[in-house]
Length: 81
Image (cartoon, rainbow, N blue to C red; front, side, top):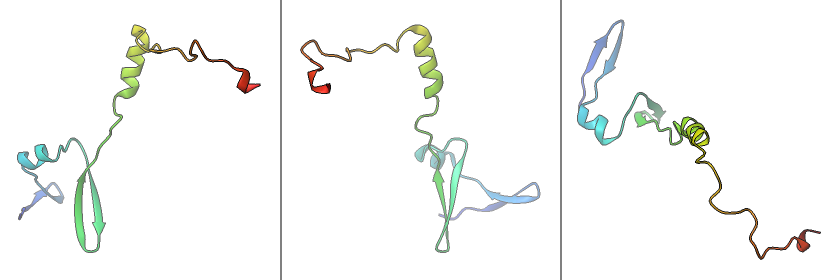
């Protein structure tokens, strides 16, 4: 695939088609990798983005309680002595 290099202010850049952006789930940034004479563009991912806000909301709503007890009814602590 050939892509034109275009003038952007005092710099130059490339434009990616909407199809490529959607196919590779490109959001705000991409990683540029220089490797053995090649330029590789890789979508950046933030798998835990937004977790802190979600956990805070869960805590405020009281939804962060343990679903099961830390100690089972038939558990003894003799082995820890």
